[in-house]
Image (spheres, rainbow, N blue to C red):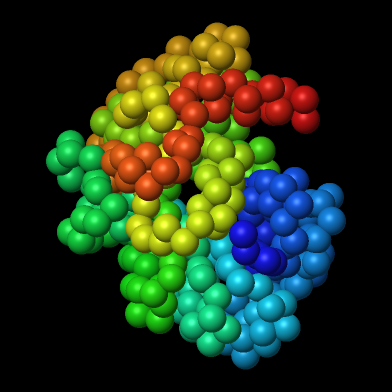
Length: 301
């Protein structure tokens, strides 16, 4: 069992749930993010940190003395990443920032977990992407910078987890579920894309898996979304409204018909997760069950 675990992006949607999961297991955490204060209520050491500056990153990780680092910090606003004014910031966080974390891990002898994305692939075809596929072809700038992060992890480290996820939702951030429920308050009809296919990832379930992984040395590249099969965003929206008891007319449209996104999106976000079971890790629960648990928390806000 590792000692302390260092978490970047601890104020984010996944980071918050990860701190909660680890502290709930009695594991000492050093949480970090760009903000001055930690947004959660858990008892942990918090270090304000700009991951785009190597000096402070190296110093913070040396001082923390953690054996494991879970790197959740990222620019995740996919459409905003396409703006020329934002691109330097996106690169600084996703590429340079990850490179800094990986270098510091190599310097301190820490194993690293990097949260990556299905967007490193081109999203063509219908075959689920395997963890060891190398046919990278990101469609947008966000995907390009996340792939650069993967390459940095591989460059500096031998002991690492690269965990690719997709369609993320959780209590502590903006996500598709929250957006659908908000739009349903002011619209009786919604158009939702039905030719992009994948599976949602619920952050508390992912946090549990990341904690489980970091209790082991079964390093490598993994795919981790919830179970329950592959669906379209249209399918997801219909299930959201059915479970929430919301009456709204959902119209399926193609990506071309929808036509509102600045960033290109992959049609095929299917991720093969069989490596999790093969390595002895418990898969994430069915996405429908995850949605039920999310809605119970959402309604209690």
